[in-house]
Amino acid sequence: MAGIGRAAKPWTLGRGYLLLLPLPCGFLAVFFVWPLLRVVLRSVLDPRPNFSNYAKVLGAGPYAHILLYTIEIAALVTAICLLLAYPVAALTARMRGGALQVMTGLIVASLWTSAVIRSYAWLILFQRYGVVNQALIALGLAGAPVRILQTTTAVAIGMVHVLLPFMLLPLIATMRRIDPTLLRAGRILGAAPVRLFLRVYLPLSLPGVNAGVALVFITSLGFFITPSLLGGGRTTMAAMIIEEEADTYLDWPLASAIATILLALTVVIYLAYGRLARVEVTRSLR
Amino acid sequence: MMGRADAVLGVAGRIGAAVLLAAFVLFLVAPVVVIVLMSFTDQLYLTFPPTRFALRWYASAWEQSRWLRAAWNSIQIGTATALASVALGTLSALAVTRGGRRWLLPFGSLVVAPMMLPHVIIAIGLYPTMLDLGLSGSYAAVVIGHTVVATPLVFTTVAAALRGYDHALELAARTLGANGWRTFRFVTLPMIAGGLLIGGIFAFAVSFDELMLALFLAGPRTETLPRLLWEHLAQSVTPTIAAVATLILAFTLLLLVAAETLRRRKAVEPPP
Image (cartoon, rainbow over all chains, first blue to last red; front, side, top):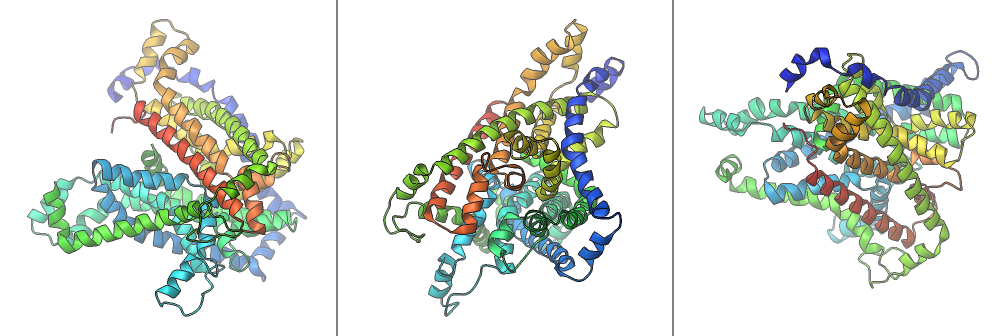
């Protein structure tokens, strides 16, 4: 196929297709690039052209702490997702026929389920007299209802629930491409299961791990719905403070400065890891 | 094949694997199931397990015109978003996959970028832009915002479909005298129609579920379902919300099944 394409090079229709660009280019310029640029510019120009907004964010006050907490919780959620998803993906990747369809169906359905609704479900479960507390008391694990809401635990559980599909799909896609004969060859040559895993399976699954980790970490950084519902009032993440500064306190310059830092963080990780993630994700979502 | 699995895992390992999978499925599904069951309660507050089956909270949601209007807004905005995203995503995908210029690859990354960015950043950038254009609070504002974040999905789906067949087909059509439009209409479009439709359903689903842009760009007249849901959640947790949530779940599942069926029928997947 590539051979035919190459032979036909003098005949490619490339130039004609370039005429399609102005519309999407213009749209993106006006409604994506310019708005982002505007956020960045506002963070340094408003109210005066200096870095006072950044001094405010990084100085005393809650903002630097919130940014660090956001990175911490994103790392925590990514780690939990990876630990949970890796064995599940490895088992799923080996399935065939109906079982495989049921598993991927569940994962994709979960991906499609509104994050508002899923976080709301956890909100109900974590209530003072909710199902989780009832279960804890019935099992004798707690004497009286425990406060679960507004803790990092609640936020982490909710976020893991929303983000698991983003870890599972690239992992499963990668693991399904691992040639089982390689494992058989390793075993015949006398490798113990642990060694077989560490030297053969794990390295071959690494592209999926990288993609999943990058995707989950980047998505976690911008999370708003789940931490607001499950952590609201006590635990604050970056997106929540940006929304609050802009919408409630109308401090747009400060909101822009925090947003610019979040943007820079996202772009750096995206450039470092993004190519991997994008390829794997588009492959797994297709 | 099963022999391989047995040898790797052993009996204890297989029991462990079954327990792990069961726990995983329970974790994934249980919260959603609880919401659905609770929505059928006959009590004034949410109880689990529900004592008696009733539809009173569905009736209550139906009677509140605000929910209906929000649902209708969401459907309109989702449809417009799907159409706009399909147009922009297809144009970009055609240019990037067929344009044959090296600098088109970074352009492709730019098209996909909104998918990876926190929506709150796009929202606080778009809000003043919409004010300048006099669109603040209008349907157009929400549709544009949603189109920015939904186009990447159409782009990736259609680009995959375009890479999935031999480019020489279009070349042949042109050589045989078809103009650009006829080539697209009778060669390209039939090949990527499945991808377009699936991308459109994806885009609709993104818009239907989107909260942050709707918070900043919609007005009281144009509020969407997630926005109204969010507003209610901030106040109280009544069974009406569980009923609405269940209806949204059912609708989304229907969309997913539609997309899946299409995907099966039209093999948009390129050969590995």
